[in-house]
Each structure stands twice: as structure tokens, then as C-alpha cells.
Image 1 (cartoon, rainbow, N blue to C red):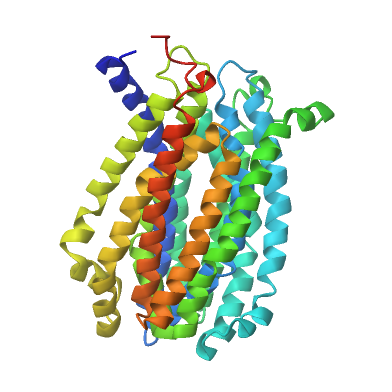
Image 2 (image 1 turned 90 degrees about the horizontal axis):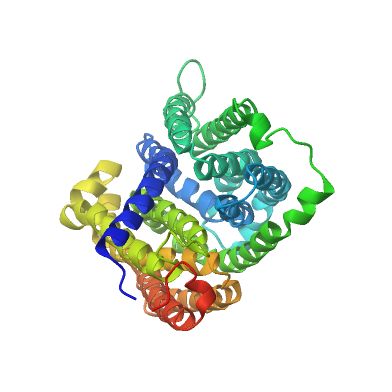
Length: 456
């Protein structure tokens, strides 16, 4: 059948209406990361070194948080399924909280081992002691970050996304204030650099998690939603699909993060300057990456809601539409990076050597996020359609390619940190092309993925 322009416009409007608050809240999360990096990089007199320390901690033990976040997030799109009990979303949220607390505890314990294994990973000696301490402090806030993430996801899929935007905005302001106190030293506190940044991050995560939980617990319609309903055997049985999605996503994230962990470790073995340059490039592009995250989450929700829904375009048309919108929005967003890389690099740091290195590498990073925009949207769509095994195999293959290419380019060809970024670009570009081919093939002939469309 031919989809009308009105239908396409309506789906685009619904997608953007959903994605807008999600993007704003995630840009807020990126704002915390960017503020951390900028304030640490400008720490005098050792900003570049402190930025390398922060990059080592976040790029290694911080990946434990990424793994457990996959456990929490993967099943949250089930809260958006149409036609269910109003209490269903609350049940999904309660189970997500349990997974967040359990996973956060495990991730925290892993972060406590960083001072022991970082020396074994061949890292620059000047980074090890501080990097291990920063990892331990960040680990204290992992459970809070996951609780906040689960609660924010619940509020978004139940039509309260602007509450999340407000909470993230307040968290950013608190983070900047605490960074000022702990990084540079103020109000009688000593200057702690990257370690102070870690303490500020951990405190803000606990404040945000507590605030969001109290808000949900005291919603006016909490009885209708079943927010305070006691956990039951039925909840556990009904949550099987949510847990299976979470376990699958966690297994995938675990393998991928173990493989991708080699990138910051390679940068650390190249020296503090290389680690600082890699961290700076990724830091500058963090807002773009978080926007892509928000767009992909919105894609997952829209594709999930379109299954079996006669008032939608259907999963296939919905996916291609929102993938194109995502790519276009990210292209607009990266234009300043393409036009003024030197000025943006100078905004981050006053270290001339770091500025020159970052400005020469930034275009490679921009090309990478342009590949990620459609790639993450297609990945979210395939996950919503149950193509979990296909995604897992594909992402493992791409990650193996990333590691091999990074080692060859950075060390065998002696390209240094530029080789690491080129390897990321090559692997992400191939991943997006493969995802597009897989989606086209897997959705071409089966009717249960086109349930929202009328028969031709």
C-alpha cells in the first residue's frame, strides 16, 4: 500500500513529540558529563593530566555501569505497550528498580577492584593511583544512577517526561556547584581535581535518584497506577519478558564493553597525553551521542507501540521514517563541529598541545556520530521487534573488528590515538550498513511486523 503524507507527518509529529523531552533529559545528562570534563580540564596547573585520569576511570570501570544500565533500560519499553492495565507500567518500573539496585551493587563492587587490576593492564604509571581512587568513588553512585535511570524511563513512557527534564536541569546546576567546591577547592574544601569531580557526580546521582523516587511515590493518581502496590508472584511471572530482554541486553553489553574496554586501555598505554586527547574528543561529542541515545530510545518506544496497532504506520515504515529523522537531526547538530573544530577545541582547554591534537581529531569523531545516528535507531527498532540474537552476533563481530583495527592502526602503523578513532569510525560505519541490510531483509516478508498496515 502507499502510505499517505498525512500519516507520515503524523508519525513524525508523534516521534518528535516523544523524542523531544527524552533528548532534553539526556542532553541534561550529557551536560553533567561535559561540565565535569571542562571543569577538570581547566583545573590549574594539571588540567590535562586530571582529564586523563577522569577518562581512564570512566572509560574502564565506568563501563560496568553501562552494562547494568542495559539490564534496566532494555525492558522499560514494555511499559509503553498499548491496551494494558494502567498498573502495568508501574509493575515494570518496580521490577526495574530491583534490577537497578542489584546490578548497581555488583557494578560498585567491581569498581572497588580498579586499584588492583589497572596496573596489570599496562596503564601509564602516572594515571594508575588517581584513576583507581576516582573509580572507587564513582562506584559509590552506580546504584543511584541506575535507580534514577529506571524512574526517569518510567516517567517518560507514562507521559511525564517534562518532570524528568526539570529534575535533570536541577541536577546539572547542583553538579556545577559541587564541581566548583570539590574540583578547584572552595568553601573550605581542598582542591581535589578529578577525584573531587567524582565525589560531585556521586552526590548528585543520589540526590536525583531520591528526588525522582519520592515524586513517583507521591503521584496524585498513585492508587490508579498501582505505584505502591506490593510485589507479588504474579508481578514476577508477568515480568518474565522484561527480564529476558534485560538479560539479553546485559549479555550483549557485557561482551561489547569487554571488547570496547580495550580502546581506553590502549589510549592509556600510549600515555597520558593520548588518553587526554581521546577523552577530550569523546567529551566534546558527548551531547551528540546522548541525543542519539534519546532518539534511539524514542524509536524503540514508537516501534514497540506500532506492533499490532491499526492506528500506526506499522513497524517497518515507522522505523525508516524515524531513522531518517534521527540522521537529519544529528547532521544539523554536528555542523558547528565541522565548521569550527579549532574554536570548539580551544573552548575545552587552554593547553595548546591538547587543543591542536583535539582539533585535528574532531572531524573523525564527527563522522563516527553521523554513522551512529541511523545505526542506533535501527538497532533499537530491531530490538523492539525481538531480533535480539541477530543484534548480539552482529555487535560482537563489529566489536572484534574494532579491537583488531584499533591495534593495527594505533600500534602496528604507529598512528597513535588517531588510529583508535579511525578504527571506531570504520567499525561504526560497517555496523550501520549491516543493520540496514539486516532490517530490510528481516522485515521484508513477515506479516506480524507489519500488523499496523492495511493489506495492499
